[in-house]
Image (cartoon, rainbow, N blue to C red; front, side, top):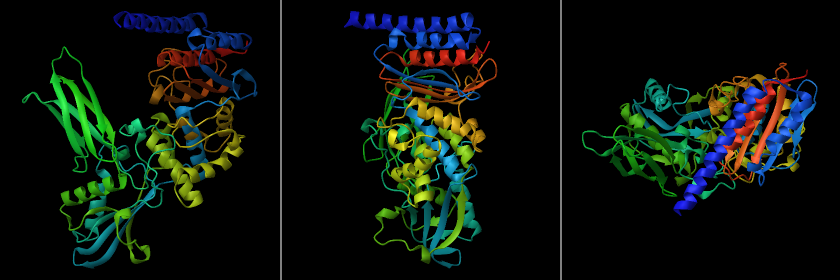
Length: 497
């Protein structure tokens, strides 16, 4: 075993070294590339023996002339990973508009007796993914504090009944089709719900308490909804920090295990079960922190013995999210799965009057047809690309990119994409090259899948669309990244003459 491990280490180091040499070679030898040489150079790159048992799908097209600079397996289906978010976000902009806002309605059920509401507060969710600190200077509770202030302005300082969360505008399928069961604790597999809060996650902050020598765990929001089991040990600075977080399936019992160094702190995230109940529990806690007395309980509407009749309710106020053009930035720059799933179901809600992935996809299909993409020749089962059942071709992705280039919502779409060497999931790639701050593209990753699709300008300032997808590779991820980066760098140096 010892020799096997050493052998594998040498292989990995050699592969990484070869990749680094290839990048350096590109920066020096190929300061400029001509179109006539480009195809052969691409063949050399994609024939890399490290990927001899993997599959590459590639299409590179000029937006000015329609000319294909390179293609390989462009009509074959590939797992796109998060490149699927290009389909969700573009269709969302086309169908809903860049100024669309998610809404959450707050109602009262009952009557007022002085400053007491003899009855319930009902919160009707419609898919807003932004009830968190993302747009509020990282203040997780800002929205709920504002709601509490609004209730006080209405003269309500006591609620004798319950705080009821209505999530019935969406289905109850929190996880996407084909998602792996072992994803459930991880932030990127947060459950979708019409009523959601803090990305349906709890922030876990682990530090070493220097006074006690024990590991300290703080959570945000600081709620009683979750039970934290601390299994973390403090180790010396000559050891390593290694933390694992696991939520027991179907519960909100969260185990935090591992080691943390004396001088370290670590922040991570874990999903919650039943986002609606989570949202209502935290809202009740915030109301009580504002000295609003709540006599009842936080409740998921599905647990009530009798239905809520909205004809008997009085709307107090409506909370609106930031514009969709800001939301798609989170989806694409940060590759935020939860936001993508919420958008897909919201499309279904707005077009088909019920929020489900099935309705969302059916609604998007009309847009895909406009893009020149036949929905029968692709497989889309979720909004984020986390499922391995999603299948698209590089040509379909390039058709989408070409369509959006001519669309009135091109700028909000383009501005939502990561910028090479600058921000998002491309923030640390292609730095120090002509491709830096030139490529706008969506990354994608799930096991043995790496994708990159978007826009780049050549050395002649000619706009180009591209899609580069690798499937079924077993070498380190860095090698696939290097190949994608090499292609973008050479495109940035490409000249007609």
